[in-house]
Amino acid sequence: MFGPGTFSIWHWLIVLAVVVLLFGGGGKISRIMGDFGSGLKAFKKSVKDEEAAEAEKRKLEGDRLASETPKEETVKG
Image (cartoon, rainbow, N blue to C red; front, side, top):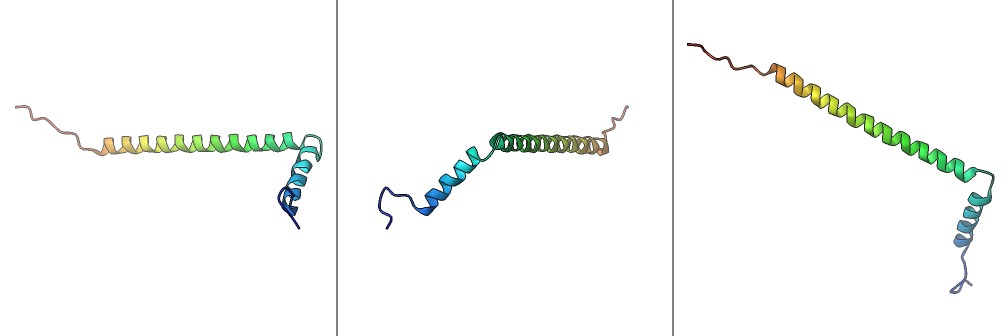
């Protein structure tokens, strides 16, 4: 039924999906890509903020440990 060089139903469904995405309406692709870009930008910002918060936490923890360490006293004599 389907010999070499012919398209199966799955090939036609994929082609139809691409055609609908490309020609399905004015600005759909640009809107989809804009939403994707906004989501990616928000993700990068949240990762950056999380790394900054983690670095600040490590700095504060180091400062706290340094302040709790007893200092050596020298004996004058």
